[in-house]
Length: 272
Length: 207
Image (tube, rainbow over all chains, first blue to last red; front, side, top):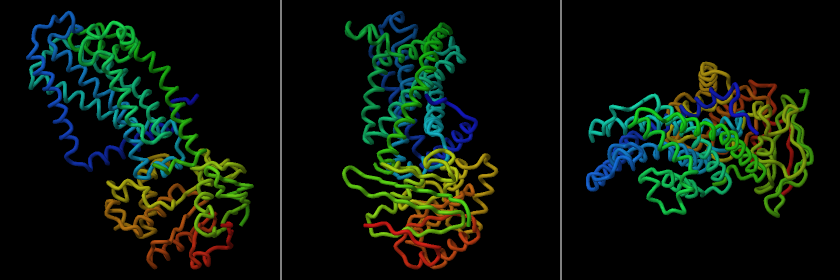
């Protein structure tokens, strides 16, 4: 099994993250347009919430309204997508532009490469999550007066750690079968919905509820809602997420490394 | 010249049922330049990739400075230009690209910056490095590729048709840079007789 970090890791991760930041910055309008599109998406849930106001907060994990409930799903769902789909998209871009081979022949551990590729999507999604919550507060009037911000940051961090591992697994699949982004998209959407991103798990069909309770996304959403709207009660969720992440990250890195090794054996790193 | 830098022994590589390399034995010693020749499809690029470590041989062994090809230590000792032109980040400048690859090879950002500056000055490619790669011609990108190969003071250089798109001045600059590194082991895949005159010997791959 691959040990997640080495002495060289921080420098490699910084270099790859800086490259991704510079690359993203070269598309001047993209960040702002994507943020605007996401805010439009958030406002969609606001108007749905306005249409169906009479929902008992007890059914909404402590959230004061359906919009406040769904807001957590949208924001955290974005962080989860960035950690999983963001990484697979980066790998796919490297395959298509032909840079993947140029990078993997450098004296860099495969695990560091995986960590580095995940770093910018991770930072970007964290920043965006903050922007969206701020927008929801200032523009749409969501009440965060009871929020425990440290708790929220810890929930976001633990969630990202865990889904970074899942991103590595999806990344390994993209390395192997190239056009596999749809697998990542379907997988991410499934666990996001199952975890109760946009509706309470209680409305799922009875046979799906046990599955939903197993989804780590449920811990992420419950923890974030507890931190934002109840000001506490997120500790168990963070511990649960970190415990799963501690097991899954080395496994994800091992799979990613094995996938690159397999590509070398097949001689298809340069293919797309 | 003394000491093998690249050692390939009985290297075979097949893609599906097609055998591209059929048992290559080759040694490139310190300070030696070897021209790899052969018709299209004879496996020149494949052999370079086997040495580089991005492809594993189906059989046989490849060592770089005594380390198995593809290991971290072997990769640290090799610089390479690949036959594909598309191995740079098109949205970034040439200098930012070089700096990124230098940071993967060198211990600190300061060392990476200094080395990039030195290589850019040596090859006189400041104007190319300042441009976004998407605006560079094939020949300009090839010069950046050569500059990238020199980063990190490698012991061996693998060059795949390095002069294919270069003008006379850039070609002369490349050979001059190699002449300034007399200890470097260089393996060059080429179709051009002019390149062969700059090498100590040739190694022919059967078609």
